[in-house]
Picture 1 (spheres, rainbow, N blue to C red):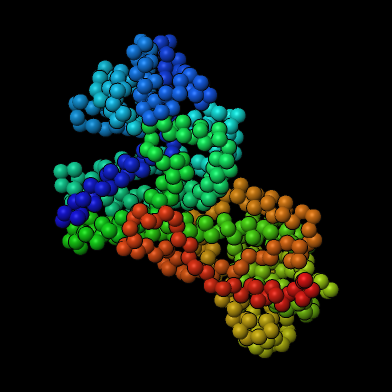
Picture 2 (cartoon, helix red, strand yellow):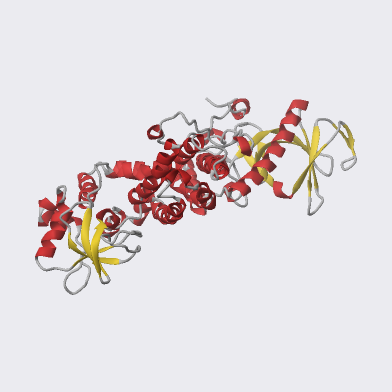
Length: 512
């Protein structure tokens, strides 16, 4: 009982901390006697008085402005709901006149006709200051560094409100918070974009921090906002840590919740839901890594026609040689690559067997797979062995394929089944790669392949096949014994050794 009471109390504090340390924060606005906002630049602050860059500098600046007779106001970043008459309640966006700021945690202010204390931490951040300095930061740089952190902030505000409604202040152990997680489980998907963007953000920050002016700028922002002594990359890591901790926290709460408790079933369902959220983030991370390799593979194919492979596909499922039987009964030896949604066929060069020429593709969404027994096929009126066919659902066109061995055929049949399953699972998970990410992958691949000879010898090979477990086994295993503070990133599922490399080595006899 005691353990559950403490855990329930922790949820309220933890969620509040997440909102106040994640992105979307804006600094307090200083207003002159005429009511116009005065934006102090970083250079102005440095030149005006070094005292303002020391701990407590913001308080010092505000108190000096107030003592000089200026009207100083701050914009509320999120709601402050209180039942205490000595505290000032307000909503996000409200303008509060700061009357006294000698205490670093609580300031005295006026909102409408009421004067009372309000938490200084509700009016603080980095993003707005960065946006002011267009000479230091481009729009693209800010998008890379901060990602969709403001969307996460908005989502967390809503989540926090609903969580506080479910929190029982008088008897915390009776709180019922499981339904709140279930209500917002789809919204947590926005963390996927942020987590996938985070490595790029760290790289961009690392490059900027090589210059002293950026190190001084970010430190000045931190001091002016009286934020704790953590560098900006530490604050940007917080959303990644939070989404990892939710399954751990729910597992711990579930351990201390009896089956008779009214919240037990909801907590259990919430635990599974948050594990699936972690799974979705891992899957998107894996796909983003995959599309770069797929783009480079396409660039290596000679005579590519039509849409880019990334317009519809994001992973290679299987590849290998098959004999294709035409309507006229002719056999064509081709190299086939099965991606999600499409099957691409290529022809090997007669002399340079490591070079492939594009020969066409089939829409797997329109195809029905038919396993054939050894013997005469009625469609082609030919005797076939180790054969299967793909039949168009719209045109009834038949595509007949023969493998060299029975085990090769079995692999292709399984691969086709896996392709359909993965397409369905991606739809259920809402797995999508943005158009910008696809375009960037193709652009990078074209730059990497510029000036190189076409084919495998001149460009990176196709990505390894990506073996995955069924959807109910895809989630990240979250051990309850791992201390929460040690969870800093999302675990990537281990992958089996790729069969592709064995096939690739056989295709490149002339490579040096």
